[in-house]
Image 1 (cartoon, rainbow, N blue to C red):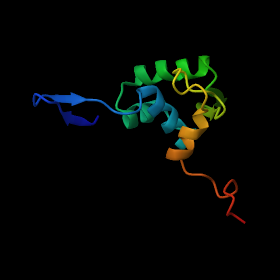
Image 2 (cartoon, rainbow, N blue to C red):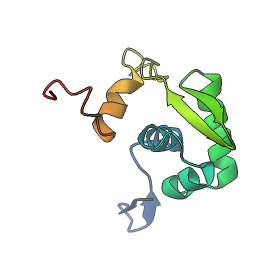
Image 3 (cartoon, rainbow, N blue to C red):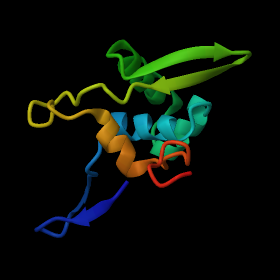
Image 4 (cartoon, rainbow, N blue to C red):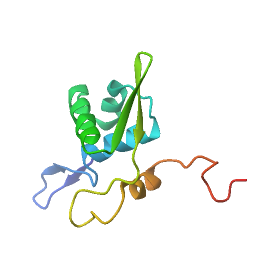
Length: 110
């Protein structure tokens, strides 16, 4: 987690994205990732990652499909942000900033 020095010299930990945002991005980058790996990438426990994924699924941001012994996730880019200041925007806008676009979806591909 990022550390910044506060006005009184104390270290404060904060980031611009919540753990929910980080988990969504990690899964968008690797839809077949194990939750253990997502948790390591985000810096949370595996149990916290499971709870976050359950939240994201319940609100329609993710869909889980069982493939053999693993889960594969599909992200819903048309889901809207939850905070009133951004709820007119879709999470796909955030995903586009932080995830690579496959060549078949790029306008310049061809």
